[in-house]
Image (tube, rainbow, N blue to C red; front, top):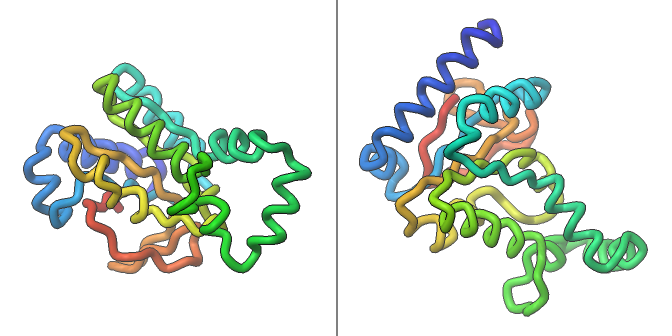
Length: 183
């Protein structure tokens, strides 16, 4: 299917979900998120189209920019040392549950909460940057502040789809999510 036709259908599906929030929660097993899949090599096209369609009612949260901001907190040299220390447990660096320091996961959640406070739909983009951090999309989607909000979270998800199998970045089989999926 051509990008134009596929793109049109996916954004129509997204509009339908955004206009039928009660149904979204029912289909998503109580979740409050939409996983919007697209071929990784077409990411820029889908993000550009989403920005055209939703710029007035959405906040686009770029994970790649948050990752750079996270690294810049202590500088690249310090980050390199920390990353080497946590190479086998990256989740402890990027999503430390009991650590009071602001980590990447905290930054993502805070940006989503800011969008909610502004009455905007948060769109997570460039989520491929999460690969290798130990942060899974379901960690974000199942966070209490996302689950309990009236506004849904939209997660742009670079993936291949083959029937019911979704492969993040075309190779990592996706977790089962409490969300609705737009394939």
